[in-house]
Image (cartoon, rainbow, N blue to C red; front, side):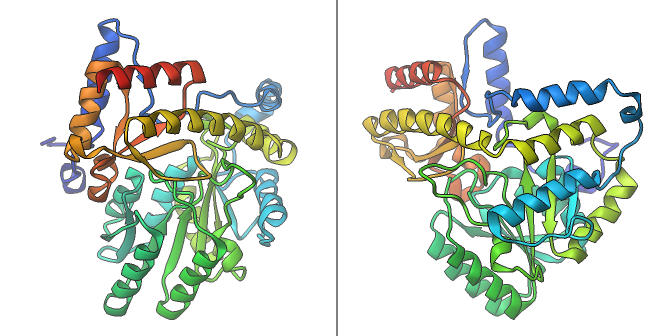
Length: 387
């Protein structure tokens, strides 16, 4: 136990991906060529127009000063225009939008802003790890609901609401890690529940721009156009391949946006202004780029799915995200961490064990589509040889 950390930090559970990460680093240090399909870090480049605008604006001395914590107006206006065009949702750039340093920071500060100690939060399980930890940072209590199947999730949520007062429902569709998507009717049902039981819905919409066959994921806000019960977290990380740029947004309910904006004003001075200006170019001028990236991810997905099915994995059908979610063959006894460690040792391929995303992820693996097709083909060949 660290004597200089507080009770919250000392009680954080061990990050289940640490063992995989340590072995991956050790293998690379020993000279092994590790094909990393575990970490969802996009390999595709940021568009040249965005990079060129960053270089241009970084040369201007006036942009080297502190920026605006909530984001420059042009950037906030750009995301408002995108929501109007794509989802027919009217956002006021001043009251319904705040720029965040990626969706991960945005989510954590949002929850710190709207939750009180001991408030109850419903969280999906399995889920991206920060969805489990952000409520804990806000000192809230989590109620975890199995989200491997959408209708069962709704049924269990209804049962919880009948007997428990919750402050917030935290969801993410398209979903990481399961790749599940939902339709507008699903969101309509959630908003009806929020109106009935008076809670806030927060949707992590980080994978909104990576989808296939024209099946554009709907926005939660389209089911709550008065923005009474909903906040959405949007990110340029995946759809525009800008992971390291750390540009995200919290959009929706004015009270919730005002709360996180106020907190952020005490904590940061916003993202480096040239990054904000360049990101405005991405939103205003590069509508087609997410489609180009999605085409690449679709081809990679088809390659992985073909090989996994040959190896008797049960693959979650999906038309979105940059991941493949697959159930382990029965002979591996549903121990996803052991399976992933064995694969890393025997095939030099890193995968994410499903249990790292929550207890209901046990028995599954997640594969990130972040290598080119040649490398992915080699990874699948290595895994087949190891099995």
